[in-house]
Image 1 (spheres, rainbow, N blue to C red):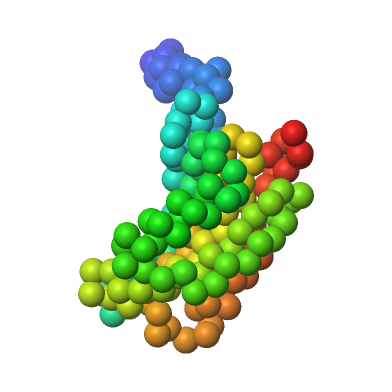
Image 2: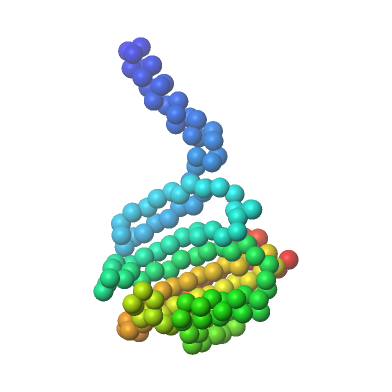
Length: 175
């Protein structure tokens, strides 16, 4: 009986240490009903002091050698909306892509811009849908990428993701 008690205590010590360490607790909980799993994701470090952090990447199944995807990045840069727009257009041109559409929006009370670009990269005709929410010290960047000739359903799904994007907590408040 004493051996079982000691074994139980030894097994519980790491769990108790994890419970005492806030960094060991999941900071984000993600559930994917379609894929059939749920996961508690840890905090992987303080965002302050970073230049660029990709917070999440979602990919679909590979089709014709390419997986459609959406990702959200935080870019810690102070360039304003016009600076971001100029930089993005220049980067798209450098990659051989053409901006086909730009639309100014408001997302969670903040200025935002939606860019749609297309072109060939690595032998594939791609379409990019990019939503940037710009504040004084950072940019939230949602980018969805798919094959250019995919049906309208993919574009509609990407637009639904763009339209659902919101800032939460203090990020949604004006400074």
